[in-house]
Image (cartoon, rainbow, N blue to C red; front, side, top):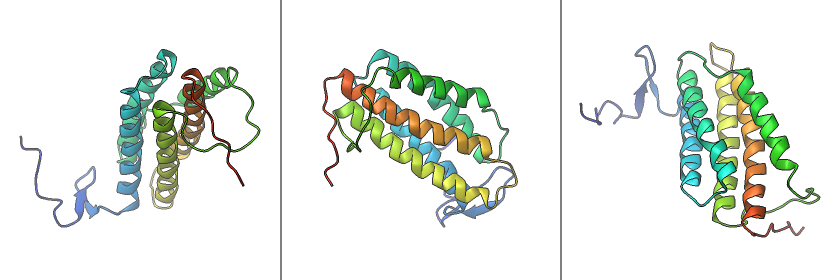
Length: 174
């Protein structure tokens, strides 16, 4: 089987069920944005991150793949347990960090910066899914909660990597 079909050369793509839509359709934008988050996490996982942070990323990548399939019109396989798990992880990692009293700039070393980029990409995905909710025939409440919590978790993971690698958090200067 060839990887290219040429069927998308005119700016359209196929949805599950065979319907053709523009590649800028809100559903396609949402799926693509979730794929971008997954790619960012895959890249971040190749960096020298603490083992406990690495252990958090792979399950999320699998969940993001499932979320993308759901957004494409497939069966919803994410559960509220995923959101609860991320809340526990946020609490556990946050407990090891100094309190945040000011805004910080993204950075703090390569691993932390990669996770900050994944966080920003996650927030874009969240916005794209919000846009898709206007037309989606399915409820996307869990998808939105998942992406919202993931953005929070990625922020905490970026701070964790910065602190554990000896990086410096740069405070925003007004």
